[in-house]
Structures are given as structure tokens and as C-alpha cells.
Length: 92
Image (cartoon, rainbow, N blue to C red):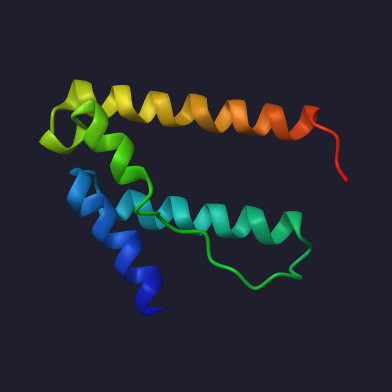
């Protein structure tokens, strides 16, 4: 619980986003994950410190609304590309 709470609250605070939105998104992400895995994998989907590199590269850490929206758009595109690649690449 300490690791989950630290990342899920601290990352939005560092990036200037709302921690409540991160908690709600983490909750929905966890519920979707559990439904997709038929409740067989005990896991919590939360924030990640890996996104801080993307925010700092685009200037998103400066609490500039334009930079934050640009960073979030780039992260969203990266996720979409990852999902498409996962669906197209053969599974072993």
C-alpha cells in the first residue's frame, strides 16, 4: 500500500496534475485489468515514475498547461502505438 500510494500521489504532485484524477484513473484501470484477467491476477494499476522523463523532456514539469497537454498527447499516442503493435505482432 505504501508503494502504491507514494507513486499514485507523488507523481501527479511532481507533474502539477490533480492527485484525485490519478487515484480515480488508477481505480478504473485496476477494475478493467481485473475484469480482463477474470480476477486471477492480484495487482493494482497506478502511476509510474517512468513518465517523469517524458514530462521533463517536453517541459511539462514547469506547470505550463500547453506543455502538459503536449506531453499527455504524446504519451497517449505512445500507448495507442503500443496497443496496435501488441495486436499485430505474433504471439509465441
